[in-house]
Length: 479
Image 1: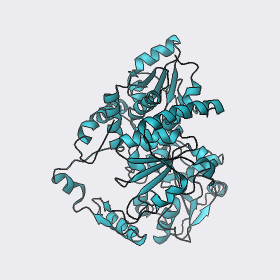
Image 2: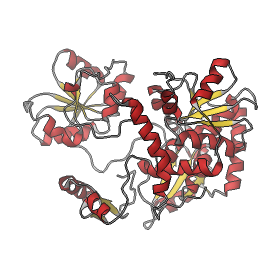
Image 3: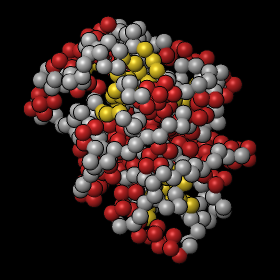
Image 4: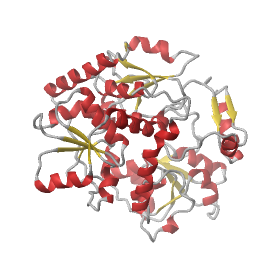
């Protein structure tokens, strides 16, 4: 919540059919100093009964925006069969996947190199062999392909640029093979390449009349008691770790455009974007401003990026003091000796993709129910993806009466980084899943059955979003 709603006086409406969860959330927000919290009377059913729309899925506004961009700008595309034909005949082209590296590793196209969305204008001009080679941008479905391809076109790159129609899903529906585990990333440009990228972005900055801010002006915005301001560093995580503005939040620019509702909860807020090159921030602002946001770009960030280290989201409260940490090496020894139970409360999809051997899964909101069969003296280690959620889940168990509870420092990611093996959850491992896994939406390729049908449903849903979103009066697209 401190990241999603940084201003404590912002109006918040909680929605859930489960009044117990709403009550817990309300109490937590009040104790953390949020002063304007309401509960939607009757929840979603009451909203729908009044004739208002409900939507399924996530990133609704962003994906509808992508469809409008393609329609209005006539973004060129190639289909999977054409691209496969180019590959089979050796037709020169550059194929880039505009998703984050983790998604690209999960499933990608043969010959594709990863280049997350806001990095395209920064990295691609130097990566193409000459100005006549076509560039094809793909993602999982449609939005990031469209926005990525149109970004290069809007920046004035002279190569022919295409979006891959329906992305990896369209490729798979065409019966073509995909790749798992790829890790190729378009490298950062040289000094000359950065100069080219800055020149392209400078034209976008001028054409869009994107307002610039000095770092010293930021304090005035972020301390405004009447208006919410977000400050996002839109570079890749490794660049952020090397140096960033104190107080900025790291969100890759392509994801900020693709899934704005994941990072920006307050409507009509101001968004301030940061990078040291005035490329990734400018291209992100190029799209967010067209989505209706008031956007600024920091002009003099480079020399002021004095903070180092990974992005650590602020939290509302500290976990219980008696929730003790454990390092991966110590956990490995405990597992070998059979001295503990490991419960994973992270995102269920990523747990299935690579769990700590011997661990089982429980959704955090149902955690205490999942462990009721264990003795209260059982040593338990709680894990999650990054280690950020686990201390709080450990506190829940201590409150529930368990006596020996620890949480894994660095989570599953830290476990893998330390060199320890992970297991994939297979079809016969349902006994490892102790609660429902409706904590997140599962992409079509993660389904156990009906994958092609799910892909077709997803693509149909995505194309159809614009018609529904256009009825919402608060949406102000300006393509």
